[in-house]
Length: 309
Ligand SMILES: C[S@@+](CC[C@H](N)C(=O)[O-])C[C@H]1O[C@@H](n2cnc3c(N)ncnc32)[C@H](O)[C@@H]1O
Image (cartoon, rainbow, N blue to C red; front, side, top):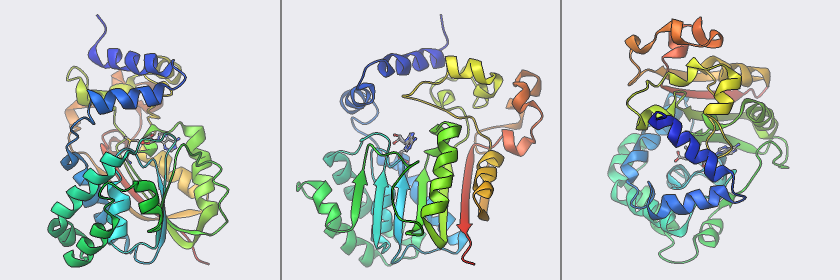
């Protein structure tokens, strides 16, 4: 019998065979899967970490024009940034995932946690509450309600060719997204990001560069996907519905540097990846000799700048 993670990979592949496999998978997810009664505390970390990254990088979103890559299902960060005073936000995704009920749930969650968010962001709770109350659709069609307030949703959207003007965006950000994008696509996304960013603008990406199949299969470690060569991993582990690029932190930094972006803030966290999980002889040659901090990184926070000179 195949291990659990490989059976999960096969399910993704199976859904990927259907023309609207992504939509079908979302329906299953919403009715009997993870999103049926999604617990938004599972996304609270994205608020904590994005606030931390902005503070560490000395950045504020107040009055700024923002763009998100891979907005996902629950628009936690756009609503957060709106509360913090962003001027405009464009959420993008390769697949249209957001639904009315997810938007309402997100605002209910943020409103209920306004004091905690105020502590994290140093934004007064009454400002957050006033802005979130206005953003809550309360049954009105959310797309128009949000668009009237400067938040637009483009999905499906190809971030490699946004067609937006040069130097038009202050901040591009993502949470738990760019490790799921194939490297050639990501290369184009970094190039496009550097083009559309205003001088002085920045990119903030928060990502988890470990094998996410390990979160539902205790028989493997979060380093499991590094055991395969490229050809085998593409065949066994990847498909259009669920793709893990396996890039290590240094690869993201190289991409940023290639397009003239400079490092403003970085943090590599190990969390649940323990030293004893690193058995170099089991890793593919491509990874075997990399520094420990590259291999054991479970969580990578990066902020890079487009210089304004
Ligand atoms: C793990 S989810 C994270 C969603 C959300 N950012 C969050 O933190 O809840 C990854 C997201 O990346 C999106 N995605 C995958 N490949 C993408 C690509 N090439 N361009 C833009 N988004 C992509 C997926 O559709 C999905 O919404």
